Length: 203
Image (tube, rainbow, N blue to C red; front, top):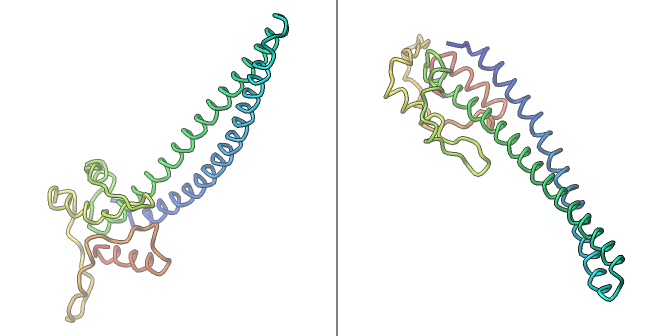
C-alpha cells in the first residue's frame, strides 16, 4: 500500500500534468478558432468564385473552364481547412478526457487510502467505473461512496483503520459519505484530509 507521502507526490504530479494539459487544450482551442476563420475565408472564396462563374455563363468555353478550376480549387481548400478543424477538435477533446481521467483517479486514490485500502491501485482496477458520477465541471462527486461500496463488497482489499487517540473523550462525528474531491480542496482542507489519512480515518 502506498504511503501518504507517495500519494501526495502522485497527486502533485497529476495536478502538474493537468495544468500542462489545460495549457495544451487552450492552445488547441486557439488553433480551432484560427482554422474556423480560415475555413470561413475559403468558403467565401468558393462562393465568390461560384457567383463569378454564374455571371460568366455567356463567356467562351476556355474562360468557363478557368473559372470552374478556380472554384474547384477554392472548394478543395475549404474542405481541407474543415478537415483540419475537425482533427484539432478531436485532439482537444482527447487532451481534456485524459486530464479528467487523471483527476478522477487521484480523487479515488485519496478516498481509497482514507478507507484503509491495502493496495489503492488494485481497488481502482476492480472498481465499477460505470457508477462514477460527475458534476457539471466533469469532476467525480461520489468517490467516497464508491470506495465504501467496494469496501463492503470486497473487505479483504482493506485493512482495519488504526485509531491513534489515547484520551477517553468521545470520537469526532463521522465524515459524510461523499468527501470533497481533492481538486476542490483548499490548502487547509487538504492538510486536514492528509492528517485524517495518517490517523486511519475516512476522508
